[in-house]
Image (cartoon, rainbow, N blue to C red; front, side):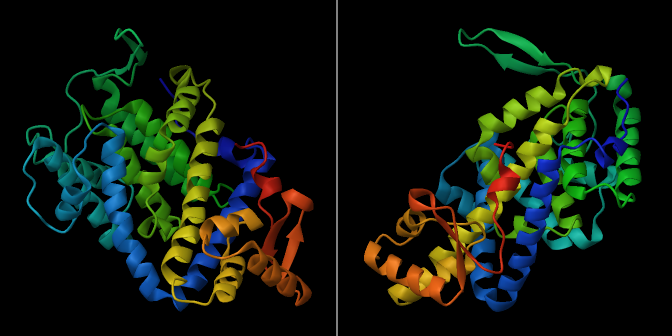
Length: 359
């Protein structure tokens, strides 16, 4: 039987990963300042994010429909096909998290309610109930042959293991030496290895991730789609899941690859926030003002090429003139030299050293 104990997170996580959590924490602070100044922009991002989350999380499982139908369903349109009913169920569960996260906790009642919302339109008999027969995580080879990649917890043990999982989570979150950014992916990995439901485990795991981030003070999931980012890099996600679940039943698995993947996805959410913010808020500004705003608002060090990619209508000369003036005025700092040079607001820090080795 797997032993659920997260005390190892206090002293067994590589230092470069610890540094990455500090960077992400700083990004959260910057996001909070932006929200105070640009509430209308964040409202635009919120409406976009829920559509992308509903689309992305279902697409990972092969549940798809057109973009226009997803927008209609998110807006309240009645689903027609089986896939649309699945999509509608996820939308309902995600809306519950966004609107009621302050009143929710990670407990059995909440997990079962997510599954009920997810499945009641397509499988009302099993909705909101743990599995009643054993299931397996299958892998399909290039020739179409199937093999069992992972054997989850047996049906006889599901209730006991879910109880132990939740108790271990409660103990860990009360320990101030354990970062919630380490605890979240470990909890999600163990949930996926238990695989307590006949169907919907992957989508439930992503709903739990969104809730756990909210409970940890990271509401970026309200404005940028975490699920969409996983879908964009799902090969890396599944690779990390496969590595970290190896020898899980024997308590010899390594959580670190899945932790790293989680942090990378979260980091990409903040980076996407920066890019989305630029696209929405700077359309009417003067060219020089747009360049300066990108530099002052960037949450990662950026190059001249990055600025040009974001502002294709702005000449290299204009970019260089603004860079020169801002360097002279000590508004930004230069990181690196020549072609590798990056620029960052003087109030911010470089990400390169902390992310190196986690890619």
